[in-house]
Image (tube, rainbow, N blue to C red; front, side):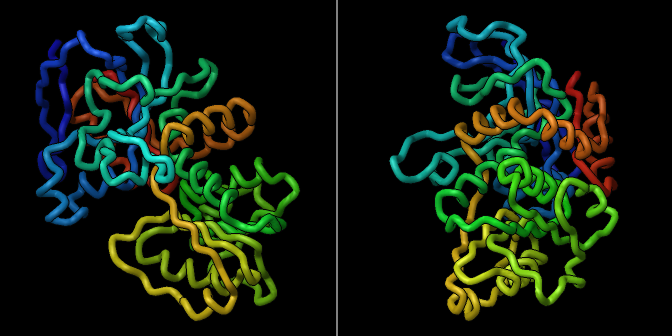
Length: 341
């Protein structure tokens, strides 16, 4: 069959390419239905990813957050029409110590490998997880982002000490919202405090115990563990604030990506005996855990609906451009494309 792939060829310019794909294979074929735009996609779209990266990775189909419906399973194990979340990480080997998302040999969609902006996506069987029909598709579209918080939380639970009375989350954006919401559902008796720059964003965090703007943190406020969801140059200031506000032997879970090195106060990390836990992307286990978590906590999904910002029906390439441009001007939430092209 001929599959149409919608690739970014240069900043703000998409073209259709055609790939001949055989159904005589082990791949499960999925028709995307809802796709969500990530900040990483925007860096490619706007050309701010850097000349070297743009030169080596384009042309490329964007989007690594999305769901769809199964249209063909060569083994007949998955019914046609089954809703699934698609996993963008593609491991080529296994390791008893290193998780699939940290193996240097793994590929990742929309980062040097075609993402989900295609008529049909051909997936290995373990690269999809079935979704309950009742889950809101606009929320489900950005499950991949939710798995980032889940993955970080699982790593934190394996490495940090067990005194978990007070959590601090730095970042008032999408990932900060998801992380703090997940902490409140997972640690019902613990206090969750969110630190951010924008009061209008912090106002959305109605489910946490306290919120503070980063220039108004009380001197006597201390936390057991901190989660960084800021990224960019701002992560430097966030991490240094965490170091100041943490009790000794606490942990810092870093999730935000920065294009450039940042300076942090290593002296106080040593003095306090702090643990820094880095995490990036996620794997199949995190998707399974996230879907189960969403089944168990319907109110968690309801709160996530707050993150649905723009919804754009996509039937043409111009609609794709419109969705990306709308996302650039959106001050809150995720932009979801209803994929009908």
